[in-house]
Image 1 (spheres, one colour):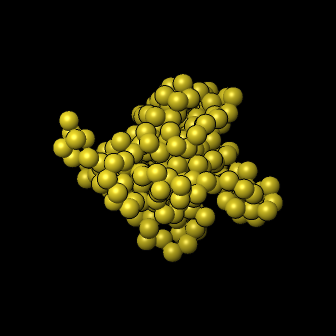
Image 2: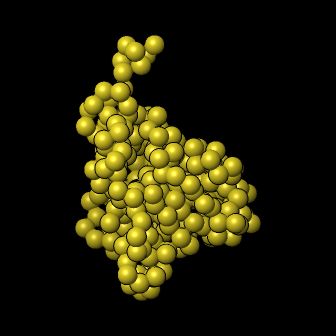
Length: 220
């Protein structure tokens, strides 16, 4: 009845009928081709120069799409406009997700409490719930938490080094939930990898055996 009275509109182009219309789905660019096997950045070499010079704490990052066009519009609508149904849409469109054999739990990247309240939720939690269902892994939303009420604004960082510095010590992990278990971190977008790497470092320090990550999109 709601769909009849208020039909959904494409979050990218505004066409009525679907949250992401058929035309915009065709414009969603897959994050494939030659990429670093660790950070998933475009790279002719199996391991990019950044990962050689500064290895990430996260073992491998995989992303389904390039963060551009309709993908960017959908992620922003999920994050800032509260279009929660997009979480399932995006994960389902991403295709098969293949966790490592030693992965036991799915953990979303947490956001500070005040930011979560302002947004009406955490988009990473919504994505992680769908990922856990599809992979048949246990979802642990309390395994990792963000320190502080608001947290730093990484968008204000001028460089990757700044972003790495800003997130140092940003997370705390529950040892009782992660010790001896492999973790799949879930977030919406991977950019500098600073957040994912710091989250992985925190989980490993709490006893996780290995940490991989999956995101909807990769900012190339």
